[in-house]
Length: 290
Image (cartoon, rainbow, N blue to C red; front, side, top):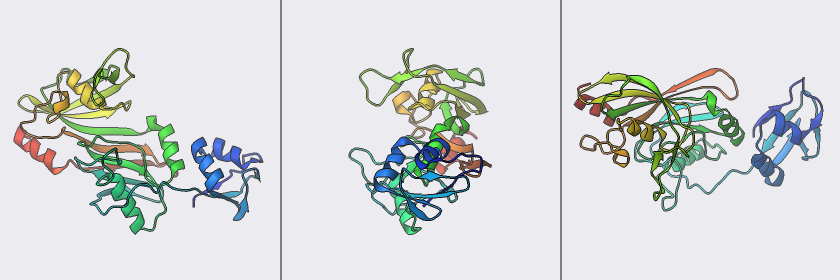
């Protein structure tokens, strides 16, 4: 049950106004609290039309989504505190259940972990990775924390390691080309003038014989953005057959979310979370001569 303290500088106001304007509670979450949750002001049960004063402590509960099956699966925790969980997702695993697959996902594993820890949490991912991309997924333990992070995505630096076919020229740069859905496909994306703005920064770390290891930072977060942009500059990810990457050395896209940097949503301290390169990509680098 999270608590929210009314700052001494806040005027007396309806609890709804404080929760929506100062606490950053989304309208969707407020409706959950109003319809199925509980409110208390200074431990005294309260109603949505009550007022709060400077210094008051508001305690809220809300119903969590229970549709995700808790399933015992390996879970590599990279960071955890009272408000956040960051996990290292392996390649081949979906982040969230999808049509036709309701088990075996990261969400199932996290819900099982929460159950073991006696946490009353739903699954609230802040970022998502493709099934065959490995690396860090940041998860909020409360929907209001997820909402704050989603509203402040520009403050979250997402750094990836990418192993590509070819050698990019120049060796570092910015790819600023819009991305949209490819006509006739429900999965594939492409660079197209009527697409959404997409900006990718890259820097070459190591050059091999017609392959390169890149550091990639996303400024925007479009579906398949890194995969599309690197293919667009004729340097597709090794193993990414959807976007023209050769598959003779590896059979999944060679992309790893290796670092997340952000201001902590509660403490406001700088937070850096790191995931080492996984074994399959480390082996690929040795095959390439790295």
